[in-house]
Length: 572
Image 1 (cartoon, one colour):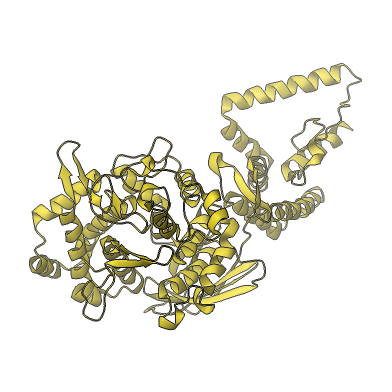
Image 2 (cartoon, helix red, strand yellow):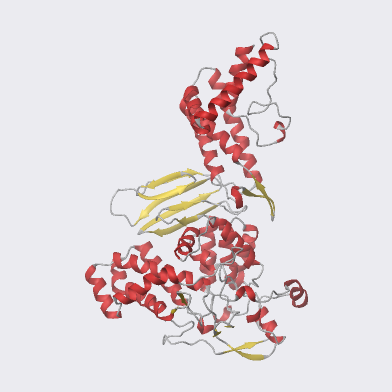
């Protein structure tokens, strides 16, 4: 167990009373119960090893500390024979406003962030034991008394540690949280203007923040700051909670807890900005980034002269790397880059250590440049990096530049589809001139498809795009995606291969029914006339809908233009 606050002695130095400037009183301070600090130490140690691959340091120092932290969490959990679950009581989460609860008196029971992260820690224990040399592993286990029975308890806790999710899909911050009172935020903001430290306000009014659904900063949401949605889903699945829609689950919890968070700490802004971007709700991303960046530059809390807030500074860098540059590690150890630079930023250049290799990244409005500059021992390529659907491997001192198109706004969508219009037109022209289409044009279509497929999805698979500042619209891009998929199949397979592909897509039986219906239509149309076909075809799918020209993104597909033009020439 590590202290929440300490000095050069390493002892617990957290204050036991806290001055409330609103009431003028000294209140008890229970923040030393934030045992989750040891989880953060474990996470940082694991990530240090993962990024540096410094196995000597891992075996000499890190591993013992990490395993000892895991033993602590194994010891603090109690197995309840009535429900067969392990429970962790008497702790505080990152929230800091809830110091007591009905479930266990001081602290709270089964804080969601703490318990989920404990399962993650215990999973990494067994990864760590596999990484260590057998003799090193044996020595450490003896030194810290890591016995087979403790390891068995660690295995059990991975499936039996209690985490509560409501029927509405809300991850309960701790046992009893959903039974607390709602705070009238509108009333308190009107009365006090600033409600960042609403805990002090409530105490001054003779009330207790423990009784309300209020938070100083993200608590349950913190798991999405530390882990990926798929990691969280995997942990919850092991605990008996199946999450069918990872991003939908995140969005429900983000919306729920955002409305109950006071942002009483500058750390709140950095955490919320990262999570908001992850779930496609980055309306306040820039404002939150600037609030965090200015906290010490402008001495917002009047404490800079005593020391800067390093965690907030690190958080602002994390927003630049994770949000604006869009660099994130995937569960399989690869990296994806999905840039969303602020409008007034033209480029970002940074160096980053990843899995023992130093890379230099330069991100502009249109492309990403990656260079492996240090930390390599051979000419073998490293990676992979995924930019859109492009899988990139990087060789030493051989920069690779990849274009990207991040669709986050309606304008991005319109511009991309308008670009495909001219590309498709040139391909059709080349077709009827008897020439092969320009490979570059085909590449543009493939690139457009990747961009559309990578657009941020909302619930139900729809895409949420920015219409204007803090206004979003939900767009269904399925037709545009299918249209480009068909074009690429048409260009790559030829006419006969394209129809074979369509038969596979539709299913042979359905495809034959479509062909039969089309043949009957043509037969009737020509029999009723002089043998010529007089129907005027308007829409890109060959129908006579009157709405086809109303969509900016309604671009006629290559396969459609070629087939209709060929048919028209044959019928002339």
